Image 1 (tube, rainbow, N blue to C red):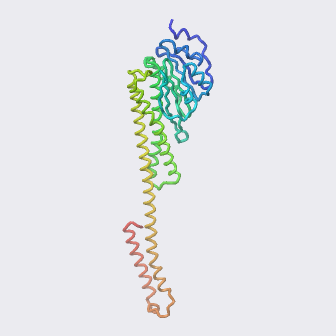
Image 2 (cartoon, helix red, strand yellow):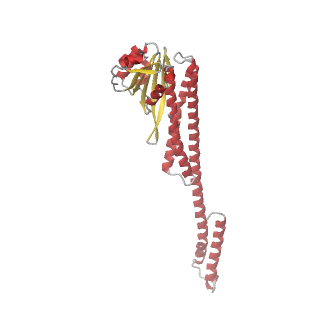
Length: 338
C-alpha cells in the first residue's frame, strides 16, 4: 500500500486565512493537503516535500510556519514587512529569497514581493502586493511528476522562472502603447496629457528595472555558489532564469530609449510647427507692411506733396501696392513660407 492511497481517505483540512495552499508531495505526486501544524511531521519523512503558499499572512500565521520549519527570526521579520529589495540570504542549511513581482493595474505598473523559504523537505512562499497566483506553477509541476520529484530546489526554479516570465506581458503591453504613441507623435504635436504619460511610462520602466536588477545576482548565486539547497544538476536551470532576466532588462532599456526618442521627436515636431507658423506670420506681416507704408506716406498732412495733384496718382499707388504685394506673395510661396 503506497503513501498516497493511505491518506486519500483522510479529511481535507480547511485552509485558514492567508494560506493559499499547503500540500505534501512524494515522488512528484501530491500526497495530501495538510494543516500548517502538521508540516514538520511530513517534511521529516524521507522523500517528502512540503509546499506551502501564503498570501499576505499575519504575524501569527508566520510564527506558526516558523515553528514548523525552525525559520530564522530575521527572515520572518522581512517576510512580515514588505518593501524588501531582491536578495538571497542563507541561514544555516536554509535559504531566504526575495523577488519582486509586477502587474499592470489601470495602465500603471504595480509592484509586489514574493518571499521564499527553502530548506530540507520544504518550500514556503509568501506573497505581498501585486502578484499573479502561483496556482499555475503548482499545476504545471504536478502535471510533471518526474520533474517535481527533483525536490524543493526544482520548485524554487519553477517559481522564479514564473515570476520572470510574468514581466513579459507587462513589457509587451507597454510596448504596444509606445508604438501607438509613436505613430501619433509623428503626425501631430504632443499634448500635455501625452507628455505626462511618456514621463510616467519612463518612470515605471525605471522602477521595474531597479526592481528586477538585483534578481540577476540572486540567480547567479543559485547557479554558481556552492549552496547546500541547490544541487549541481539543477544549476543550469537557474542559469536559464538569469538569461531571461537579462533579456527583460534589455527590453526595458530599449523601451526607455524609444520613449526618449519619441519625446524628442515630439518636441522637434512641435518646434517645426511653431517655425512654420512663425514663417507664415512673418510673410503676411511683410505683405501687409507694403500698403501700410503707402498709406502712411500719403496720409501725411503736408500741404505741398507733388503726387497729391497728379491725376493718375491714386491708380498708380494702388497698382504699385498690388504689384509689390503679389511679388512678395510669390517669393514667400516659392520659398515654402506660405
